[in-house]
Image (tube, rainbow, N blue to C red; front, side, top):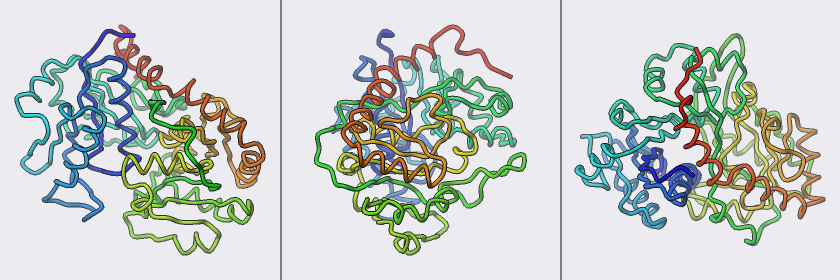
Length: 394
C-alpha cells in the first residue's frame, strides 16, 4: 500500500442529499480512510443545491448542510468536511483557516465526477485527479467542443474513467488518456444476511436531460429511451414482482400510469430510500436488481457499470442489467447477468429465481474480487502516482 497521504475527495453529497448519491462518494472517503490515508471531503460545485423540502433552493442550504454534517458524523468524519454554498460564496464545516491549511498540505485531490466548479483553485495541490463517472457523455462534450468543460478537464494531471473499455475513436478524439477505474465498495457496510422480499428492484431516474446527444448520426440518450423496449417485461415474468423506485424527469414527464398499467410496481424513492441508511436497507431487502442503462452507455459500449449495481452485488443480491460492454471486464453468467433484449432479460430473471442461492453467492464473490474498496482505491492511487501516469494521448 502507498504510504499515508493527505487526500481531498470531492462530490455531490450535499447538493443531492439522497441515498444513492451519498454512497457513491462516501465509499471513496471511508475506503481511503480505512487504507490509512488522511482524508477530507470538499464540496465546491458552485451550483444551487436541491432538497426534498423545496427541490431547488437558491437562498437556503441548511437542509443540505445538516444532511452532510450528519452523514460525516455517523462515519467518524465530523471534522473532515467543508461545503461551499454558491451565494457569497459561504463555507460550512471546516474553518477558513483549517480549509486553506488542508489544501496547502494535501498530496492530491480526487475530483470525483468532475464536481469542482473551479479546479484551478486547487492547483497548488501537487496532483489533481479527474474521475469520470459519466463516460461517453463526458467524452462527447469534449469532442463536440464544450470549451468550458475541456478547460476543467485539462487542468487535471491524471484522468480516470468508469468507461473501462472506450472505443479508440472516442478515446483518441478527446486528447486524454483515460485510465480505467470503477466504483469502490466498502464491503463491510453491505450485509448479506438481511431479510429480503421476493421483489426485483432498482432505483432510477426516468430522464435527466431534455435532449440527447447527437454525434456522427448516432443518438446518445437517457434511460427512458432504453426502458420503453422493456415495457412489457412484468407480464413476461409473472409471478415475479418488478419494482421501480422511480424519480421523474425534470421536464415533468410522468410515465407512472403507463408503467403501472404494464405491471410495474412504482414507488417513490424519496419515501423508500431517501437517505444513506434507507437506501442501503432498500437494496439489502431486495431479492435482486433488474435495470436498464442510459441509452448513451448502451450505444457507447464503454464498459460502464453502475455504482448502484455494485452495491447490490456487495449485499449478495444478483444483478441483471443491460449490456454496456462490461462483460469484457467483469465475469458474467452467475450473480451478474447482462441482457440486450427482452428475451434475454426474461431468461435471466427466470434463471436467478430458479437458482437463487448460487447466484446470490456469486454476486457477493464478484463484489469481493472486483469492487472491494481496498483493491480499487489502492490501484487508483498507485497508478495516479506512477511516473508514467501523466502521459497523455493526443
